[in-house]
Image (cartoon, rainbow, N blue to C red):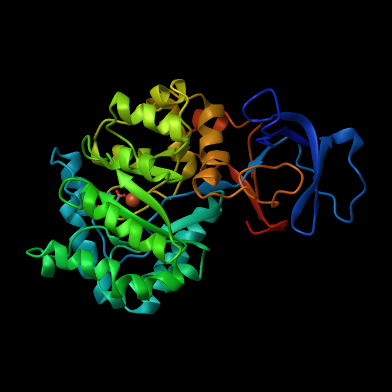
Length: 383
Ligand code: NIG
Ligand code: FE
């Protein structure tokens, strides 16, 4: 590829955060980046693509989504816009619809949303179960998800389902016992919604320990609806990432810095629930690693657009466009413990986005505009 007006490499050795190169070229061989340098010294290649001065960046890494679901909760969104507060209890509405859906219906929904993400430049995505909450429905949710990504997460501990509302301990036993056994073959990660009204720190600890015992890596939904113990638990357990982080104390921020745990911020949630946006500036200034992800789900954030999250992070959360793009690519990859994606340096997977724009800043400067002109995954053009 040649004629790249601005290339975001995310080279960690570069002087600037994004490792920007101008008037650049990039050589792809066997699905990987084989060479990066000035356009005038581009090596010969079988196929040459001239990008006409456009910007190229690593494909977005969306490290948090809930694509396996059925049903529609637009009415809840409308009620919130009219002043009603967000209620996590709405999760049970989606649980009922998901249980009633066929495997084919769930697969079709995930396929549609993955295609939607692709068109908008997401080339790596994580997605979760969590709207099944029975052994059968969690296992089939993950089996569906696995058809689309290796980054699948078992979230049996999303909420206690209505049928066990009176006996949460029995539900935790199910989540850590037969449900885990059925889910584990289809999952890489295990997650818990650690929040008042969902699961407390002891329950979260038990679920993550059971997952670790069968080889699942932990992540957490924490400090979304109010201050709570989740972020400190993530740091204590040395988790790679903890997600939401909307309400943080100074001790939470210190713990994240000390452990290097990535704080994954999900501004689509605050957009859709009207809660305050997380203070990304405070986190970066304190030396915490910040990722951005969509949290695409029918309740709290039904966007699949990483560009929208970048625009919100710049407009509402105090990030520069460069910091937001870095958070949506390189740090998203770190949140998934991946070093083969999220950067365009030699050896990385050739997953990249071509923007119909001269620079990454346009992602925030031109919100709502479909700037993605082409998407390549593993060196193959898919959009
Ligand atoms: O990440 N926080 C918990 N779960 C999901 C959304 C739940 C829903 O409302 O369906 C989230 O926001
Ligand atoms: Fe979530």
